[in-house]
Amino acid sequence: MSMGERFLDKKDDGYHVAVVGATGAVGQTMLDILAEREFPVAELTLLASSRSAGSVITHQGKDYVVQDLDGFDPAGLDIALFSAGGDTSKTHAPRFAAAGCYVVDNSSAWRMDQDIALVVPEVNPQALNMARENKIIANPNCSTIQMVVALKPLHDAMPIERVVVSTYQAVSGAGGKAMDELAKQTAQLLNAQSVDVDVFPARIAFNVIPHIDDFMADGYTKEERKMMDETVKIMGSDIAVTATTVRVPVFYGHSESVNITFNGPMNAEKARGLLADFDGICVVDDPSAEDYPMPTEAAGSDPVWVGRIRDDLSCPNSLHLWVVADNVRKGAALNAVQIAEILIR
Ligand code: A2P
Image 1 (cartoon, rainbow, N blue to C red):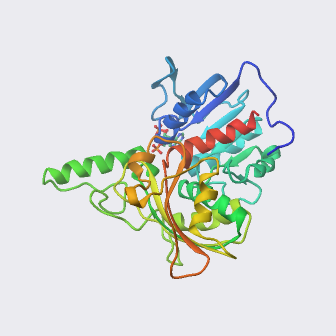
Image 2 (tube, helix red, strand yellow; image 1 turned 90 degrees about the vertical axis):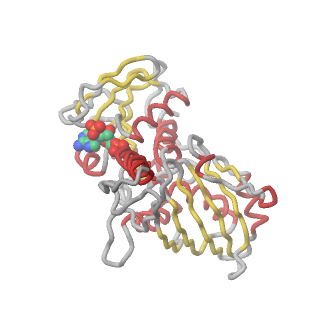
């Protein structure tokens, strides 16, 4: 799709890129993906809180000293990839944007702001045009991203009326400390010790927690609300979405059971073809060979994996899908870098 004029002037030597939250789980993956995809970086600035300022990160054989975001002057930056929490984004993204830097923000701070672009490159790249003035682009919630990639080719063929989704979300979505907590609790339980519960609302090892982010007055959690509202904003359509979001003791890779009702005829066979032909999706769907997507295979990979594609026998024009992706890559860091790639195209 043509996006019109360039967002950033062409720079033959590359761009000055900052990673904000460079010591975190997503920030580290952003660095890996910039290198893997050979993003043209002329200068790289790594930022985090005062806690880790002064520490050294080695990236592509070069040492970088992490700088304190507070007091950092963004003048001269072209692109900043933020993954340092909502409060940090609220405070610092506007001052980076005012300095002329495009901010791709992984937090929920700006996503539902009506003037801010909420972008999944495979689904709504044209929304990026909203960012030409305000220069802030929001990366959607990890669970939303992988679901809308799977919905897009189907919705283009036959409008979707309603989606019912249940998620099985990995602990890496809650950051580095959350991964440490699953590892530690697992070791504690296997050694017949009592467990320490700190990051999650309950023990996560050998458990399933139907509670991600805060509860709201209507009984939904904020994570569920994000999936419902962000899907409508990204798809630009009044799709009815209802979600139940659940944390499971998996390190990397979110899985989703997605039930979709269409406005008219759609079936599993047609959907399988549409999904297989879509950029960014890999279909793995062969029950006879017991072949279906799982986080063990999706972790470390870029595509959104779709399987268990079948007609919903209880309802006409309805399907079930099982959708798996690496939540730290496509759900966060990769999506942000793909957005940055459009900004320099
Ligand atoms: P720091 O290492 O200094 O705490 P994760 O999601 O894995 O928990 O990582 C969160 C990332 O966000 C880390 O890089 C963390 O830096 C960074 N971060 C958290 N709070 C702030 C803040 N107030 N200012 C700058 N960076 C922050």
